[in-house]
Length: 353
Image 1 (cartoon, rainbow, N blue to C red):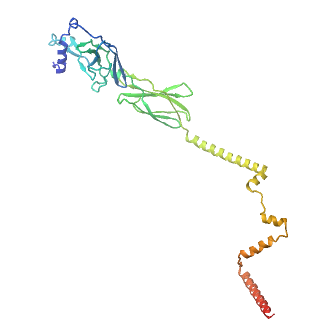
Image 2: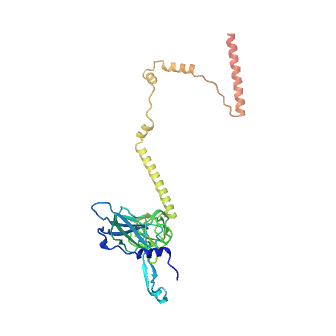
């Protein structure tokens, strides 16, 4: 038969010590009341009502027990039959990070306490040498008793016939699984996906350009499934298909073309109806310069002659000859020569006279 370990022998020794009699304790504190365990996403908290005293500050101590251990009784230790039939249960209480505290709560989230363990907690009040009795809780198994909150939506990818939900959970446990409940916003007919460990779930065979609402929940996949509450409702719309997008482009193009044609017709009719007004806007009436207007009023004024003389004096000019072809150029040369001959003869005659 294997011998008990040192830790278990120490528990047996402590349990064998006699408890002090009630008569030996002249004073005793009242026990803490309303001892309750709260657990959300494996964050475990033990709370209780404060113990009220007239003087002093009450301290509290919390302990937890590991799973119950069984040992055969000494009388039947050598008997094979008694070894299986007569066994005694022992609880070993261990300290946690809640010894002599003033708060009326204890966070007993501890990696040393496995989530699959069945544990029991107890708390008592202390005031100097005066102590209260221990108050034990019911058994607690984190995997079964914690409340698993819903995951957090990261983003939603939309196609013309599906929605893909991407989410994360604050709890990093391999036993977590997820389910999505979804429905069309305009109806009350709900659908559910299968439980899965994937943090990306696709809602398939949906209608395009339709609003769908959904909720997500998580569960701990243990012997007795611990299913958490549903998340808040989120709604997303599916996208349009490629054919519908092409149809939208055609409709927009046709609408733009019709709009441009209508605007052109309206502008044409407006111009036809208000021709004089439009002409006045774009081509104001011509105004005669003042000096021309004075000449028109009094034709005897030598204004036009002065303008002609000024123009003749101030505006220099050069002669320009344009030659189009060979025949024309020869005729032009002959004319030029004839003109020069005539001019020379005229100049000689003028000299003689």
